[in-house]
Image 1 (tube, helix red, strand yellow):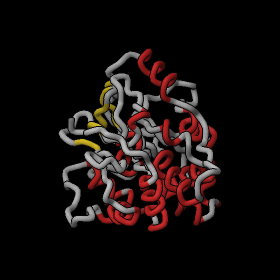
Image 2 (cartoon, rainbow, N blue to C red):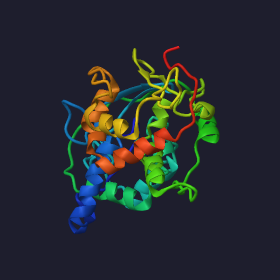
Image 3 (cartoon, rainbow, N blue to C red):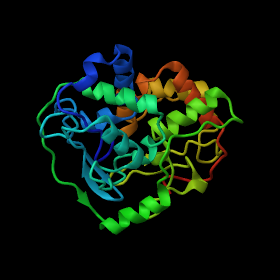
Length: 284
């Protein structure tokens, strides 16, 4: 999950033994669909032991061990976990760099954050240390970003839109944080909201995040909601071609988005199809 500092657990299983199995199962699904698995359980590492390097505009950050082992972040309480997710701060008040996607996770509902917490607490402690983070900017750059780009609090539903549309927006913005990759950024790391979902570069890699709006020149105007839902499950485009196996999206489909239900993937498609076209070439 979080490209940088993230979900933190208490020592041992805590109250997880009394947590409903359905809540733990829901938390496991969230661990996948929110992308936690890609950063904190990468190939070759123990589950939850971290270690994924994340090159970003802000520098290179290493996903930490988020198990209850002493190499991880033992001793946290649930309110500490909520503070990390909602406010992007440690128990001591230190600000996290946004490579931990708390700008998205702050929008998650209380029940979803609690379910994710229950799942993490249900997992065994594992050893594993990671390298020190390598921020490119001083702390003043982080303060500037927070003032411009971070608003704390859960995502409110739009009463003018359908339940399906609201579900799709929630999954895109709060859980999957698709907009954080598919919207261009300024040099300060702030999203260009006028080009929302218009695509962008992938720092440190020779790939790009496609324009997901209906723009006829650079977007996906011919994709239907069902095409988007099917792609998120299989990685196959409407023309039968597949996303490149060396690109991040291939990994995301396999490890994360395929965990969504068909109804949730379809809701994402409905939401994306409702967006205004953005004339932006993410490769340009």
